[in-house]
Figure (tube, rainbow, N blue to C red):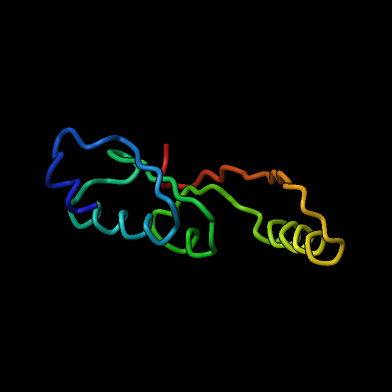
Length: 105
């Protein structure tokens, strides 16, 4: 993030979507160190919504992933492949939810 801040300066985007909460926290810190206000100047949204997203300032907006449901589905698919010898590919879709907090407008 620091490299992007230095390179882009005034052309820095007004929002970033980061692949996970740890990257978003690092980005938030870099922006704060450069006195770029979040969310006034730049909004941040992360992916995964771990408990840490609520504990930092500003709290991070994040895509909530239902990992318990994901685990249950994975075990179900594995059981069908191993115990029932099913070899047909499966498509599993799981819901997510955008949880808006203080890091985005």
